[in-house]
Length: 421
Image 1 (cartoon, rainbow, N blue to C red):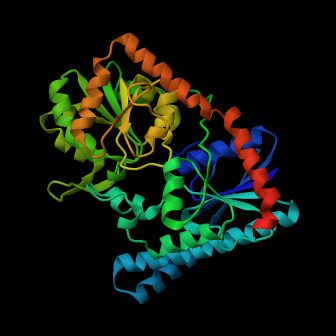
Image 2 (cartoon, rainbow, N blue to C red):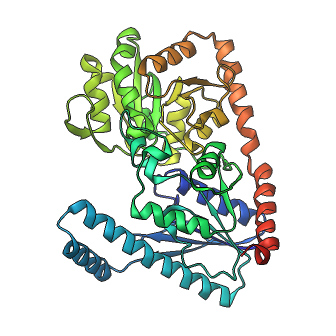
Image 3 (cartoon, rainbow, N blue to C red):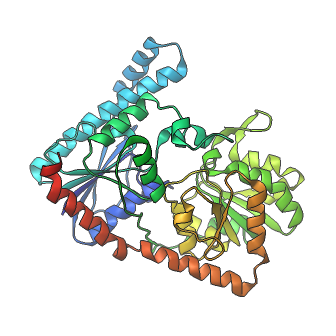
């Protein structure tokens, strides 16, 4: 099969990454390893140096700097409002990128016939897709929620409570033009069906426990011989950093020999208590009060450095307000860690409360503290049992188990294409 993956994110050798980036890297390698011809269209804001596998062709598509400047200039001519100008610019750029994607796919197809194209829904890159070439769209999330109420303390994670931007509307339009749609979790599929009438096939994200050489330098620099809880990923309200901030002082006061470790993109946010702007790590330290010295931010680190940090943790806390299917959770469980996460945010697709991890109430620091205390109160034998159950749970996400599901679905797309368009 000749398959093209189109994405705005890609996990490469020297860059830490988010969920979509990791998924794209994993699925492309899995298909390559099973004898398929794989190419990636990586659509970026500017030219990037992509260090990726030699036998997977990565095409970097981007808007030249001079054209960027024109979009900036014209968008600012149309409005004096900075946010409005930004949205105009982003929409124009994404439409331009969608045209570039369409042209590149047609160019590749002329040289070597493409069997199927896989799009991420973000940035509506499938907008001008040639209808003669089969394609599928995978829903990674809904940005009206992810960057709307989902990223505000107390904000709603209900679809109808979060207004659609122009970009959201174009993205929905592009998804509805796709005869085949897939989703990584039941929650995402339900949101798509309930709110925009799209039926999505649920196929979970594969997990690859990469056989790379660990780099334990970060662990030894910051965390060696410490007992710590680990929070990692993008540090923002969407990911529940406020829960960590508001449980920090109580936890650190009660457990004087413990630390809270933070790893990931340290985003700027506005403190929900006094309106002060600061980084997420400083926000957690601020609310830890006199125990701030036991909140340790280790930086935004690559997986070679992250995995030793995960393995050294007593447990992982993932208090996201909403998720698709959390790569962070899958990674932690695969490494035998006990995860304390948010119920109703899609973690329940992975975690059975009390059996292979623990689920807590969204936005509730006290409930998360109780969840952490449950884990710390377990005997070593009980902890080991939960850890083993966690490892067993994510075995279903092994490449050898998920590859046939993906391949069969793409075959269906190819076989039924002409009758569905």
